[in-house]
Structure formats: C-alpha cells, structure tokens
Image (cartoon, rainbow, N blue to C red; front, side, top):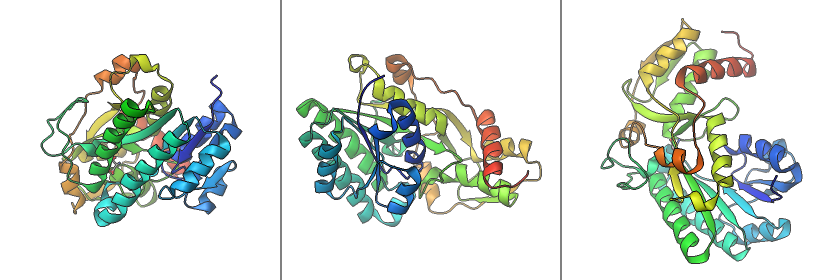
Length: 317
Ligand code: SER
C-alpha cells in the first residue's frame, strides 16, 4: 500500500463523510486529514482534522506544510440549486476556493489533487450521451465553476506538473449523509419521504431523466482514478456513469418495496437546471483507461437504500 498523506476538503459533506473513513481504512487513520468549516461535524469524523475555510489560502498552506500532504481530495463546493440561490457565494467558494487549493498545492509541493466535477458542466447545447470532449456551456454558476475547475486543473498539470484529476459525477445517491442544495437531491429525498411518510412531492416532472450513481460506486471511482497509472490517462477529467432513470421509473421501483408509496410531481425552478443536463453520459474512456465499471443498478440500489435508511430512521416499511 502507498505511504501517503491525504487532505480532504469538504470532509463533512455527502461524499466526504463516507470517503474519509474509507481512505483511513486504506491508508491509515493518521494519514488522512479531514477538513471542513464546521468544527462540530468534524468532531464526528474524529481526528486528525483541521478547520479550513477554502477561502483562507494561508490556512490551506499551513496545513499542507504541517502534515506534509501528498494528495488533496478537494470536495468543498456549493451545489447547483444552492448556487443559483446565491451565485456570488458559489463563485467565491467554488472558483476562488478551487484556485486557492490549486495554488496552495503548487506552493506546498503536493503531488496530486482530485476534484469532483459534475454533469453540471454540460448545458442545453451539449448533445445527449456526451463524451469527454463536447460543448461545455453550462447555465448555472455551479456548472461554470466546475468548468473552471477542469480547465484550471489541466492548466496546473501542463504548466506546473501538478497531477490534477477528476470525475464528472452524475447525481449521487446515498443513505448516510444527505446531499445539500443539488438539483439531483430529489433522488435521495424521495427515499427519506417514502420511508418516513409514504408520500413524496417531486420538484421535477415525472419524465425528468438524469444520470445517477450509488455512493459505493462513487467512492470506488474516486479511489480508482486517484491510484490509476498516469501514463494510461488520456484526459484529466473523466465522465463516469452508473445508471439513468426518470423520476417515474424511480417511483415505480420504490413501490416494489413500499407498495403504499404515493407521489406528486410539482416542478419548481430546479426543473430548468435538470432540463439543461444530459440524461446519460458516455464513460467509455474511463472504462478503457482505468478499468472503471459500476457495480450498482437502479433496482439493487433502491433495495439497499430502503434497507439501510429504514434501519437508520428506525422505521419499518
Ligand atoms: N448533484 C449535483 C447537483 O445537483 C450535480 O453535480 O448540483
């Protein structure tokens, strides 16, 4: 196993809260430093942790130096829907924050930076089932910030030799930590509502079809890409996909496990964001270059979500 020191920003978020324990298992507890702006949540992840606001470059540099960091997982970000409520904050955290992480990494001699990108880099002009090289004209500040992360990442790679890599994630579904402020959040909320109330009101139309992924696949992709041999990588940022389904199909699958479950569809402003994203994406390059293969499909994911969430919520279905 590699001997590395890893820093994770946004460690208390949906992905971070599951990635940190997994990285600690794999690389040793003391070699994985969790960071976030909320100290109370960091305490739950246990030590070692550091409070870092990614807008504070000095603190980033200090932590990188103190722990002699080799790899950064830069997960701190404002998601699409919250970013449209406050584009100024989204710009600050996602663009200035990412710039700070890249700069601090460069100055601090970090070897690799892994940054999740997103289906939000695409826009209405992107053809469906896009590959890596396609039209990137997003309509959200979040999407713009992720295009910045991809381009800046490539820039740092070519100019400074900083090994930046990333994944264009679809919506991520998980039962441990809820996502915050994304457009794809309905695919998680629906499970909580089905178990707790037997009813859910979607904020998208029933025909809304987006690419999604179950958390175990997302974690696998994050580790697999980080460990992949650089000589095999044609791109710095790769599409990854797990499954694609419409809101209606999701409802039907949940009904197989919770027959009394009922829904309504009341699209709000997030519908426009959902409509600007492709319904599926082509991840052939990831499969070829670093042996990516998702393990979870819609039916197995739904069964696992319902089993684990009903235990977590102490509610029989
Ligand atoms: N889940 C994210 C969002 O909806 C997409 O990257 O914002």
